[in-house]
Image (tube, rainbow, N blue to C red; front, side, top):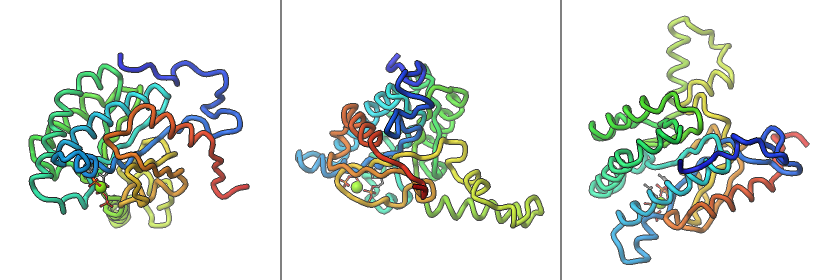
Length: 254
Ligand code: IPE
Ligand code: IPE
Ligand code: MG
């Protein structure tokens, strides 16, 4: 067992997951894992070394998130704009994904982690796409925690797809255009069924969303840290959760 979920044992200071005077443990944390290339460059290493170390960071952060009682961790692993990178870097990333799934799937499954993908992984190399499909299927009924991986994901494309889906349903007479509300739109997004997004963390000092979860982040808390992703670890995640816990969310109220 790699972690014991804090959420399984209700903490006396938490009522409904919210600590007095703070925001409590976020149900859904999403991470823009940025800075792998700069991490490698600073060490005179090839970029792939940064991506490899980045995969280690993802493993540590998943464990720490589970221990803290986070219900869903979404990791931005490959954006729909990352196809602009040189082919050899894309191949390296696919290779790492293949390796990560092959080596981690058993333990993720044992830990009760359900794997979800947002984005369109069908565009990946066929063997990688098949591996991902199998991983999703095998872990579908796990209930302890959700690991959502953003693969070939872009928020604008996701929103356009949702609009297209709802338009097709309306054209087919299944729904009235007037019935399309925020809940219906939410349900047509790739993130349908995931808990509402509470916290977005971006590493490496960049302060932008880079086409990540634009709809879902409407009222999420944003945290930008200078740490390069390969250096991010369990303590960094705990520090991020502590920062979140000290924030006051108003959702437009007072
Ligand atoms: C993030 O690190 C990983 C992916 C986008 C796949 P980068 O590769 O963007 O690293 P930097 O931003 O060049 O340092
Ligand atoms: C965002 O990082 C995508 C991922 C972390 C997968 P990028 O490095 O691609 O973002 P930009 O290009 O700096 O905005
Ligand atoms: Mg980057």
